Image (cartoon, rainbow, N blue to C red; front, side):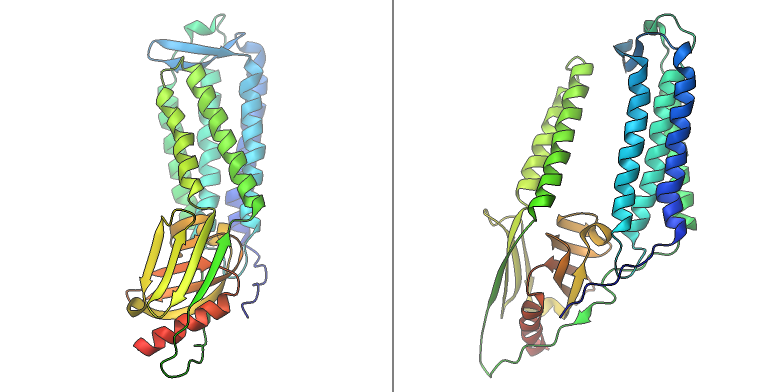
Length: 330
């Protein structure tokens, strides 16, 4: 039986890069912006078009935006890092940490610069552009992320501690099939729905502020919804020909692994966030996979070294049957 790995303490350096330093950056930006409030026009410019400022709002909204993003994003990244189990840190852990730091630096510099160029102005319509500061923000964020990546511990590969599946005993000439259906947990669907709602709200806000000039952005939530709709349920089948995983109800996307391509079959405990960065059809350093939830999974290693993982109940039985057929092919 695939056991749930013990929780692995992450290196303190990972918490420093992903949580502590970003918290300091967010807090410093909020403090600076608060000290600037008496010197800012009312209202301030919050959006610039090709001809200068074209969107305005209360000065406190920028401070609230910085504080809200700081608390929300830092807590989100900390929660993801806290899910680590088994071998750690993975490449996903390192990516999350450096993205957290880079996002904090880019956002805080950009928002603060948009306020800084308005200091002492009586009318925000006269505010100059701050495109140069946006370039600086990108440079600082990328440089910090690269340095952080280098100094963080070397990543380990998820699945290296997976257990080889014992082939199921089959009588000579016997042929069987194993079929299972997997679905994303309702709680995860709710989280994705909230995320889609935020994307819709942010898109509508951007379109409204721009006076409708960026209306093509309205297609972004629609595309996200169409992609997500194909990733809530899958059918998994193991038979003498190999492994098939297809999305329900349309049968697409679909992944078919021929039995002749399989080098080994293992059972593994899968942590979606820590190893694949989320749920659904995933691609990354852990290989490709269909990840519906944390728990048991079948890990297939192909002859060319590629990996494919699918989370499913009773993974031991499916893996054992697949290993038996793969062993026959030798």
